[in-house]
Length: 333
Image (cartoon, rainbow, N blue to C red):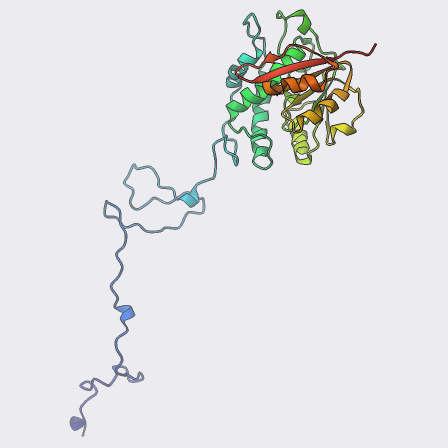
């Protein structure tokens, strides 16, 4: 009987496993597909994805030979940008010696004698630049993002104005004097009084007010900035470089009492024709208005404030069109 029917061994419809029904299905081709070729390097080694170590250090790449530099994937790179980039993180601050070299044209005298300077000034400027670039990634403080250009354009102009406003400074300052014992014109030889009051209108990133304060530490400085974020930066900056006797006014200049300040500075402000009368109204009798302007704004300044006694404009070093213009408010007779 069994021999007539045949054994299950000879019957192709019978499964090798007694509990599994076998139908005449086509074989599952998913298990018989041709594998894709594995990409390899020119050395013939396969490129395989490997997990990163917990420490963040990449594992050795299989295609690397002994002694080759490590291969770092883009996801493993720490995002650090050059200092001049908008989203920069400061890696290497400017060296004070380089700052001194860049500022030399703005501080030299007519007899070409380099002024006696101390490292504290340049160290403060280095800290200033670091903080400025850090904040500039979040709020627009300056369009200049190259550190050396910041030194020449912002600090150079500001200290050039400081040198002409306060050319001689007493040695008995809590911050060592930047300039002392050199020859200047009699018209410039006006030492700042300890109670000298200076207002920087539309201070923005702090220029020229804070560099003038670094030059002449005993003056009383008022920074007038209506933008709240910029005023917050100014407060942080004054804490970082430990400046005292600074008043930051987060208001419009029109709201301040008139005839208050001995010196008012103005640089790179919007609505220049409208701001000029406001700046002049803050001057006390015999006060001075210092404008850092372009040569194209010279005629406008003279016509807008004819009652000021204007000194001859001073060209700013390393600039073709920038000027320092100083006017004095003559006391009324």
